[in-house]
Image 1 (cartoon, rainbow, N blue to C red):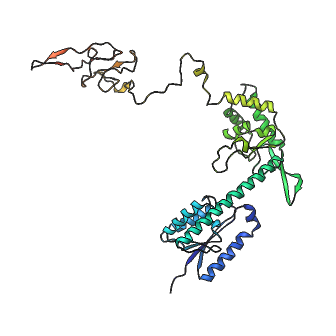
Image 2 (cartoon, helix red, strand yellow; image 1 turned 45 degrees about the vertical axis):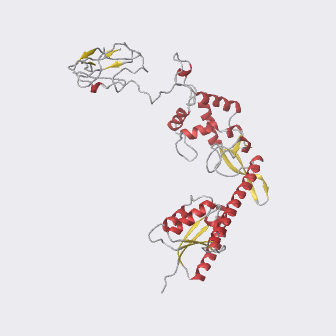
Image 3 (cartoon, one colour; image 1 turned 45 degrees about the horizontal axis):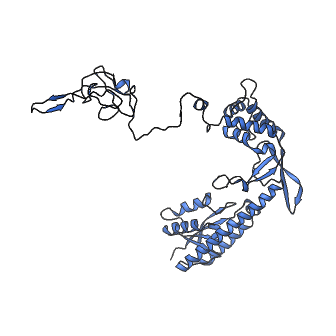
Length: 402
């Protein structure tokens, strides 16, 4: 008797609204169960992904399913999906995981796109994946276009509002959807005004405060965020640099995947009730700019030393080295700026110091040769053979200047 094929169901919808309607996932499960029953397959697991995009693999249930296939032996033999777009909407990622599953002996089967294992079926699957990827990008483009127009008209597109504001339903209703706008939250708005006042004037004792001092002041006085947590430096800096509080909320400023900034032509400004005056906001920005760590310090700009902070040391060239005091013995110690014991021509006369050690062949003060030091050459001494050689004997001296 042959063992039945073990199947796992993967069910997914792209948005949370589709998951709330509770229509697509039950239909996918019903069709997948009927498909497996007609073939005598045994369903051993099902993985449900409600409201997650298939443009990448950052899906908890998807990763749990892939991990189950990498065990030895795999937990199931086939993965059943309603269509390949439920598995992935990225052609490269789809092929990558199909081949990864194949190495573990697991197949991917679509109940609405029946394909085999021959080269023609593989090519058709790749073409279908390209169309799925194109459709996903087109849908994202049209959705973003509609959201930008919604923001231009002063309506809130969703997500958590900035601190100091709250979401309310607008009086205007278009179709079956109720539009939403932002209004000032009186309690949190006072916290925002306090942060700007501390940055511009301070608490009356030390003058204007920086971001760190403002954060410490808020936490020390018991002022909490809207969630009841402690303030952080990033949250305070975001409040001080957000143009929303002047009545101009910027929408579509970053790419949602890479978090990189978009060009200004892609950014849309939405009108919201202002919390602080524009002049106060600009004054705070000027103060923040003077405190920016990217700016040169005043000691560098107005200091007496030229080129401070500009030259960089050449690590490929030898530099003067100072021996720690614990290395120096009462007998003798040595310090040299190069391996042969001669003074380094790249350092000044005052920095050129040599310590001699009787146990090492280090030239003495009279034997050193350096462009920056005294040009005293070692005297030749006769040897037993009658020829002359230069003396390499070092006299034990301590800390001789060139």
